[in-house]
Length: 301
Image (cartoon, rainbow, N blue to C red; front, side, top):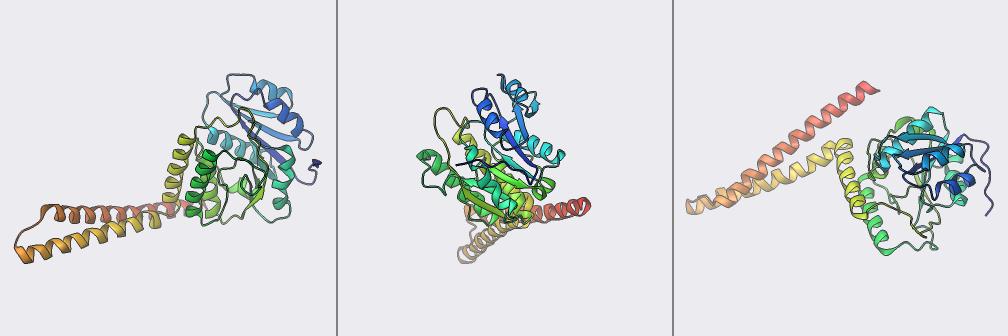
C-alpha cells in the first residue's frame, strides 16, 4: 500500500513512549515521510528514547518520572492543542501499529464523517489477537459501551484520530490505561461522533507491556468514576431507589411478622433499616452531586 503524504490539514501524530529505544527510530523515520508534526511524550524512560526522538526531529516532551499511559496521552493532547493541530493521531511506540493505516484512520475526519476515529483490531479478519487479550478487550469494551450508549468493537485501541473540536473540549485526566475509556465517556457527553475503521495489528516480538489485570481494573474504575460524575442522578439515583425499595419491602415484612406473632425478627428488620438508610444516602448524594456539577458547568460556560 502506498502511504500518501498528508498536505491539506495540519496533522499531529502523538506517540506516548516508555523505554522504546528499540522501536522508536524505525517508527519516526517512516512517519516523517508523511507528517511534519510528530509529538513524542517520553514518560520517564531510563533508556535513549528521548534522545533518539529529538535527533530524528520529533517534538519531545519528557516526564521526570514514569506517570503512566494516560499522563502521556494528556501531555500529547495539550501539545497538539498548543501547536493548533487540525487532527491528532495517537500511535503506539511498541511496533503494533502500521504506518500504512494512518490514512484509513484519518479519512473519516477529513470527510467530516466523525470527530473521533478508532482503529479497531476486530474489524479486520487478518488480525490474530491472542485469546486472553481478545476476551479482556471485549469485556472492557462491553462495559464502556454500556456507559456511552455505543456499539464499539474495540474501545481500548490506542490508534485513534481526534479532530480539533475534540482537542479543544476534552483534556484527559486519568494517568493510567483508563484514559481510553475516559475520553470516550467525555466525548459521549459532548455528543461527538465516534467511528471505527479496520486496521491491521502486529503482535510480533515484544509489544504491549501493559499488565492485563491492572489494565482491566484501571478501566473499570475509570468507567465507574466518570459515569458517576457525568450522570450522578442515573448512577447514584437508580441504586438509591433500589436500596430504598428493598429496605421498605423488608421493613413491611418485619411489621407483618410483628402483627402476626408479636415478635420482631432482628435480621429482617436490620436489613430493612439498612436498605432504607443506604437508599436515602445514595439519593441525597445523587441530588448534591447533580447540583454541584450543574453549578460548576454553568460557571465554566
